[in-house]
Length: 76
Image (cartoon, rainbow, N blue to C red; front, side):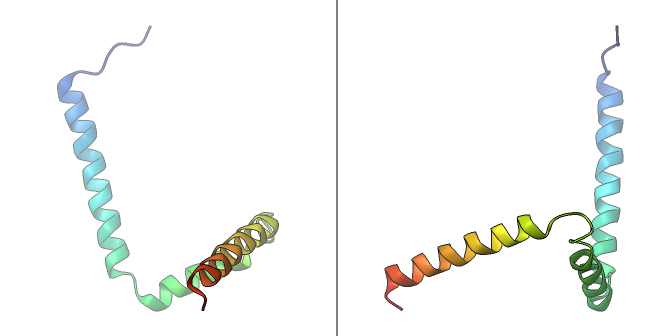
């Protein structure tokens, strides 16, 4: 049977994750826009290899349907 985490262990665990999250936020803040766009391009290019193209197409169709419904409601 596993022993329960103590309050000090829980606080230390939380502090470690807060430090990790702060480091990640800083890294994202300082990453250049060009690098972020390259990362996005790689992700989008890999969609087919991961088998995401059908799911993405379905999402696109759903979004188009929503926009068309909004346009009809607003008579635009």
